[in-house]
Image 1 (cartoon, rainbow, N blue to C red):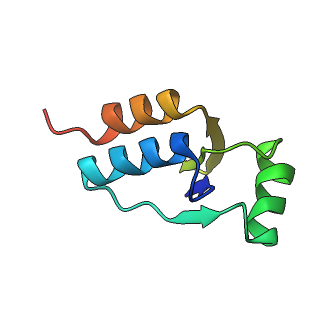
Image 2: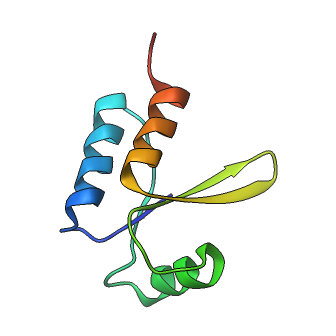
Length: 80
């Protein structure tokens, strides 16, 4: 899931990459939804967006920084 603020330019950059890669990722509005904002702070450690919550092999990882998220998505989903 991508925790985001709609108007954040870094979030827009990540959403564009998601669209380009044709990946389905749930977006969570951490600006207007108190539950998502709370989850981001309590589980991710800080209220900073964009943040990608990654669940793999029973583990949860919180990835901040738009460039890191895009690199991860490209590595994982880009067609070679």
